[in-house]
Image (cartoon, rainbow over the protein chains, first blue to last red):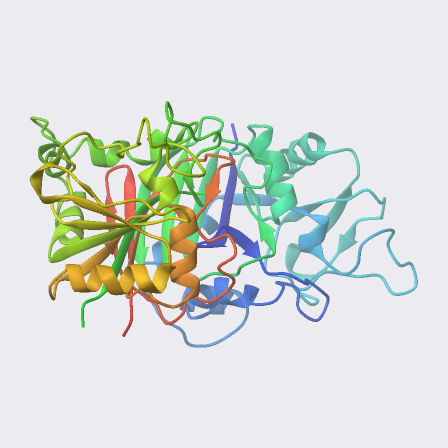
Length: 214
Length: 214
């Protein structure tokens, strides 16, 4: 069965986004600090059409997280733009431009119906209004036997974690404090729902902690 | 100059003690899970008069944290017992029995004056009512040129971190969730006050992240 796999960068104090997220500052104040380790990597840069970059102990971790993924699920806040109903006149089409780096079906959790958005390079955003299990089921079908990536944000992750639907989780822990913002594990309680720590990779500027079902 | 060095075990969701701390359950519900990695180690067990135990990648980390320490500062809640004024009839003398494992002067932050408590093996608890800087100054004098350990709990740590007085910090991150309790970095904000990540040790059941001033 195809797995639901979740990787996310988190600060030492447990935040995955800073405070005051906006269209201008989608990661919130200081939130960019969580991703600098990734932006420096060649494997990340090539995916976003950029030259150069480094190879270090994070490279195989990122490579693994991209391997055998046939679809993605994400929360509305991660798709971004604005809260509430979609703006028909100026539709928000995501942060990623005309050719997003997914190249497979992406299912966006939302309370507001919208027609699918087909962009270049094989990425189609489908908007799912009937909940996390329906979104996962559609993503599994869209993945054609490959795994499904859960790409965040905090609220979507909390819902899938609490429902026990996450099969693998990789926390990329960044040794910095954000102080406020979106906490990954808020409301998840004291139970990892069968996920156990299976691997630690100490890389420059980040430590990757992998969890899986045994 | 003698350093203030802080080591503590923290959950993946940022807690250093569980909820509902009490005399019967000093670490709060689930808090013991943060320390199982240490309890299994020979270097920990011998210090508490116990036989056996393991040697693993955590052993040198614990050994380092115990080396060149001449005094300890801790918060009232870590010394424990009960809140408010000391009970003159049934004085609380700490969690550690007649021969505590410190074997050096220990300075306890409290709002309530009390005469020093001299126990066996060279451990004397001195109760300091005039704040964190006074306690640190007295501990430095008591350490005779060696470093000072800050042993917790969360509130004492937050005060020393916020004041920028911590010179080294080692977070022993345990891959478990507590869900509630005492958060280490509550109120510290988004600034590590000059502490930078300098080392990661991936050990069984725990990852040690060391921070220091460069």
